[in-house]
Length: 177
Image 1 (tube, rainbow, N blue to C red):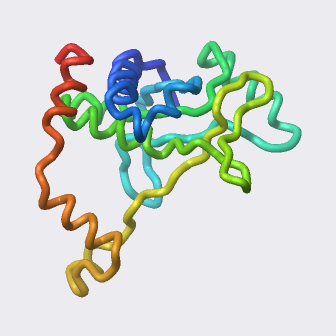
Image 2 (image 1 turned 90 degrees about the vertical axis):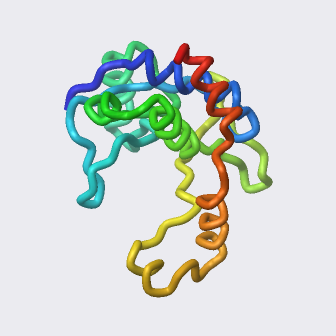
């Protein structure tokens, strides 16, 4: 799989982090790598536009993996955002902003058992973990049973509401669109 650094994705991410501080401020504190891939991203049999991940390997392979990532990217990131370059090219600017926001939302600041944020003792950067989606459901379950639980009911209300056009326009302005 071929990866290249993406300044365009980084530009969207920086704009989003600045505008959506309440949800994404912690992401701006870390060292995130933004990459394009030229190969299709398939997960559980479905093509995806992108993903977020924490680059880490356990045990003996850890040092080699850290070295290889640093060699490939030029530094050792706290997290990766990987976007399918072909899909990116087909998206509108609003869709690009939504995709990057979605992937950034997966980066949750890890906390201790007492709820305090965790930081890397060497770099001082936040330690991230992957945050799952608010709602996960099959279309046919909704078709047959409707919005049967709280998360789905909330999502239904959000889908019927107007998007926050002011913030979307601010993001587009920040990326020069």
